[in-house]
Structures are given as structure tokens and as C-alpha cells.
Length: 431
Ligand code: CUA
Image (cartoon, rainbow, N blue to C red; front, top):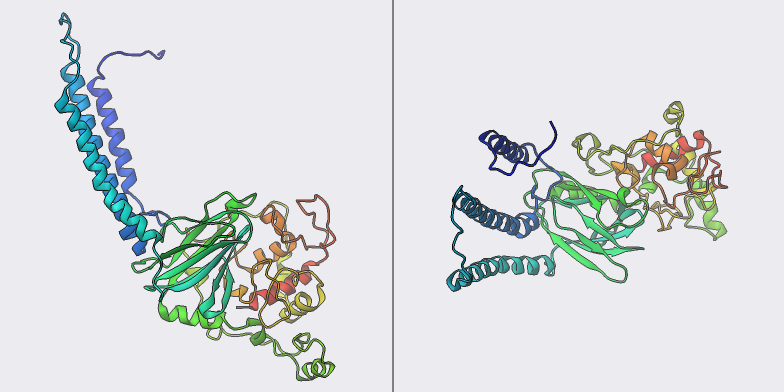
């Protein structure tokens, strides 16, 4: 049947279908839970400040909408044209009506303005001095988190103690980024040559794990600049913080006494630890302090990024990776390789271009939240990271691997799968 305009009131069947559609839409909006939504308020910020204001405005807006629509439909129906009807009387102007429809909206806007201004002042206010201070530094494309109070430098995973106000000082290392954990607070930009602040108290968190994202376009891997926030009990936080502040590598490898003495007598690089030899000290989980168990992460928190086609690793090697050999390779033998960009506390690696790896084994994700932190993903990441996250600084290291940016095998691509498996064993042990 060809489409035709039907200039008449819709029949009862049409009205019934429309009502059904509206009802279905309304019901679908109510069903299910949305853990990444701002309405899933878990903090004073989202509940009292933003949530309260949003609810007030949505209900006032809904009331005005319904009032206007009912009036409109009623008028259309009552004054519809009828056969043989005379021309209606023309009128112009009605002072009473005009004053009313100016005054009533003005009153409604004034009513909304009070809580709006109050919320703006609340969200722009200075945090209480007792707040936990966290520095957030945006990088293309990952997040650096510093806890000056605890001397912790970490990346891409935030730990927040339940009930304590936390104050974020937001800065960028390069371009403009924007920090957003939808369930915990509003967005705030990270701008060059300026520090922005954002503070809230996770006082009503019924969940423990949250997704965070960059919400300002910042280049090729903007969509790959994610992080996780874990709201944990004060005891769990204290345990996590205490251990994160220690140099993980020192507890992992005890330098042989003879080698340490030799380094001391030379008087040159006394701070440089000797190549690890002898038994590798693996800290137990209790020693490593609390961290959020990866298998407790709900489905919406787990990384689901697919692996690039054609990137493979010999899984058998992963089981045979030797942490001591990996440490020797990464710290002592790779020249400008890992040392050029990363820090591992307790070793000579102190560069701050890439994420701090001191406790990388205690993180649940790698590559700014893109992939799970397991041996397989870590191995593939070291082998050819640029295939897994376009545009990044991390060079292609796997022997014979083609760098997707320069479309050829770069000079850095020298590590065999066995060497990568050894490095992975070391990094995994850095709990
Ligand atoms: Cu950082 Cu978008």
C-alpha cells in the first residue's frame, strides 16, 4: 500500500498502538541496572549535589511538559473544524494571559536557579583539608595516579577508601583530557599549565569496582584511555597503600652479598643492584598487601577488548618464564629498552615517561584498562603493543614484529618469545 498522508484524527487503533509504544519505552527505561550511569549514585557528589538537582529539574520539566501537552491536545480537539462551521472570532492580545505566561516561567526558573547555583558552589568549593589527596596526571593515553601522603605512584587503577573524602588534583602531561567515573562524580578536564580539582566522598558505595574513562578527545587512542576505581574498606586501603609504597623489586630479589660488596668497593654505581642470582624471593599475597581480586570484578568492569588478528604467542613458553632472567634482562641488559621509560622501585629504573611498574603485578588490567593483566596479554603487549593500542609510545619489541606505525621491523624488535616470557614472569611477580 503506497504511503499517504491522512489528514484526519488518528483512529482508536493508531492511538492504542501509540500508547503501547510509549508504555513499552517507559517500562524499558525502568528495567535492568545501569552500573555505569550517573544515576547509580555512590557518592555525596552524585547523590546530593548533582542527583538531587537533576531529579528536581526532570520532575519540574515533566510536569510542565504534561501540562502544556494536555492543554494543547485539548484545545486542538475542542476547536477542531466541523462541517458548515462559521469563521471563528479573531482576537489579538490578552494582557492577563501574557503576564501569567511570563511570570509563571520566571518563577519556575528562579526556583531552579537556587539549587543550581548551590550545586555549582558545592562542586567548585575547596575540599576539606582532611581529604585524601590524589594527583591525577593525564598522558596520551593512560592515567598516572599519585598519592603524596603515602608516596605512591601508580597507573590506571585507583583505590579509594570507603567513607573518606578524596580530593583529585587534575593535571595533564600533554593535551587536554577529561576525568570521569560516572557513578562517582561529574567530569572534569585536565588542562595544561593549570590544576583543576574535583572532590567527593564515596560514602554510599554499594559496589566496589567502577569504570573510569577519558571524555575529552585527545588523539588516536582517546577511546583506549580508561581506568578502574576500587572503593575498598579503610583496612583494605591501608594494606594496599602500605605495600604499594614499598619498592616491590627489593623484596623480590635479594642481591647476593658478594656482588653488593663488589659494587660498593668500586664506589661507582653503588645504587645499582647486582644482577639477581640465587633463589628468587616470591612474596606471598599477604606480604603483597591487599589488592582488588581480579576474579571479583563484575562483568561490566572486566576488559573485553579483542586481540588484534595475527598477533600470537607460544603459550608453552609462558609457563616456563624465569623471573630472575627477566629481571636481569629488563634492568641490566636492554640498554634504553624498558629503562628509558619506566620506573621499578628498588632498581635503577627511574624514568617517568611510561607507567610506573613497581607493583604492576598487583593491577588487574594493562594498557589503561584495555586488557586483563594476565601472562598472555602482557606477553603480547611487550611483543607488539602498537598493534594492541594504536599510536602509543611503547615500542614494538618482539623479534621480527612489524611496527604498525612505521610499517617495517624496527631496530627495537629483538626479543624472542622466550625472553618475553622471562620478562612477563618478572613483571607478574611485581605484586
Ligand atoms: Cu585522554 Cu581522551
